[in-house]
Length: 201
Image 1 (tube, helix red, strand yellow):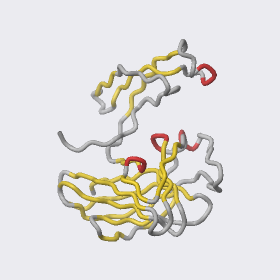
Image 2: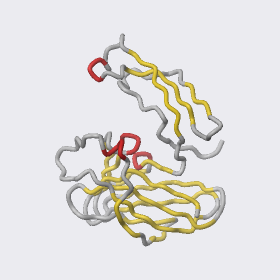
Image 3: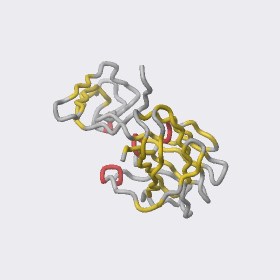
């Protein structure tokens, strides 16, 4: 068995207090994955009613180049649920040398890879830092491509002054075949880290 990690599925449950233990996942000829599962009712008012279940289905491609921040090894950070973030979660990363997320990434071959960290500020200008296999990597920060479905989610993160806008730290690095360690380190102030993407160039 090779390495594995979580990836968002095509269907996101409603009323997760009742999990659908029997789920169908079928790979379609176009490369998308058809996902069928039971869930709480699609009506939020009755989603906690055990007598109101629904069958949900959707087909979509899954991005296996994405690594969710909440699945990294945590240091000086806190995992938080947030419907406006990828996979419904994020990690609040402590500032400077307090916060560190460690991702263990396995790639099939050595070469140059594009790294992208999707993140959001919480009211103060800050940019995370990157290290690959123990060496610092210089990147460029800019606005992240908007996900309209996620952007439509209401921000319910009390106690911060975040705008809901996302930024992206982009860099390139040489990775070796097999196991690699990528670290996302704290910026000048605390940040919300959504995910890391690693793609071959």
